[in-house]
Length: 419
Ligand code: 5AD
Ligand code: SF4
Image 1: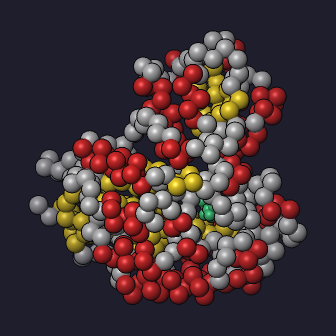
Image 2: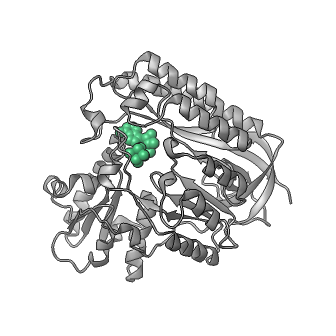
Image 3: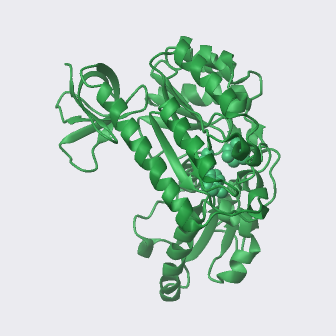
C-alpha cells in the first residue's frame, strides 16, 4: 500500500514536471513515505531522518516532507520533535503534494478524507510488468494490535467503474499483471462486491494475464470468492489469508472475529475446490497473554495447514491500540524465541513444498533480471513463487513462458524454460 502511495506522490510531482533525484545531495525536496505498522519500521525512519540534519545545514533550501502513517500519527509533534521537518502529510492527504513547492508555510495535512475513494491521482509506476491498483482505502476492523484504522481511516471502496477503467488503461500500456490493493478486499462494496469485481476485471484488458489481490480477512472470505478464484482464468491460484495465531484465546484478544476451527474450515474448502492453491499467511508471535500453550497451538496450526509461506512478526506495541493497554505483555526474549521457532518450522515446510514442484511444468511471468546475477531472469509462478532461471536471448521481462522446475529452494524455485 505504501509503495503504491509513493507511486502516487511521484505521479503528482512528475505531472508538474519535477524530476526524481537519484541522490539526496541533488534533491530540492526529500520525501519520507513512512510506515508505522511495527516499531522497527518507525525506528528505521527516525534513523534515516537523523542523517539529513547535516544535509539541511549545508543546503538551507532543501525541504523535507514526511508522509504516510508516522506523519498521520505524530502530526505537528513531528515538527516539534524534529524542527528541520518542513511538511507533514497523512496518507489520506496526498493531493497536498500538488502545491508543495509553492507553499511558503509548513504544510500540516492530517484530516480524515471522506472522498478519498473518488480521488484519481496521477501515478508514476516503478514496474513495467505488474501494477498496483487501489480498490479500497482504510479499514474498519480494529484488530486490537493494529494502527491502520487510526492512520488510514474508515473503510471506503473505490467505485467499480474507476477500477475497471484503470485496468483497461494498464492493459493498453502493456502491463501483464494487476495487484488489487485493500486492507480487507473481501468487504469491497460498490457497484459490485469483490467476487463480482473480479468477474468484471477478468473480462477487460487483453494484455492483462494475471490478477492478484491483497489482503483477505478470514472472517469475510466467502465461498463465492473461492469459486471466483477457481473459475476465472486470470485470477491467480494464490491467497494471502492472515491467520495471526492458532489460539482461540489470542484470536479473541486480537479481535479477529474467527476461531481457528472456522479458519480451518475455509482452508479445507479452498484446498478441495482449488487443489493447486498456494496459501500464505501472517503470524504475530508474543501477543499479550500468549502462553507457551497458545504458542504451541500456533506451531500446530502451521504444521496442520502447511502454508506455502508466511510473514511472521514479533508483537509490537502501537500507541493508541487496545492491545498496547492490555495486561500480560511478553518479554522481548520470549517473543524472539517464539518467532525463531515459528520461522524455523515454516522454513522447513516452505522448502519441502518448493521441492514438491521439482519435475513439474509451471507458467512463469518474467519480471526482470535477478539482483544477484545479471545472467539470471526472475519471475513468478501463478502461485506467487519466485522463479529463477538462466538468461535466454529469446525471453524478456513481461513474457509468459512455461518452465520445467529443476530445484526447489527455501525462498525460490529454479528451472529451465521450455522453448
Ligand atoms: N505487531 C506485530 N505485527 C503487526 N501486524 C500489524 N500490526 C502489528 C503489530 N502491532 C502484522 C499483522 C498484519 C501484518 C500486515 O502486519 O500480522 O497482518
Ligand atoms: Fe489492521 Fe486488522 Fe485492518 Fe488488517 S484487518 S489493517 S490487521 S485492523
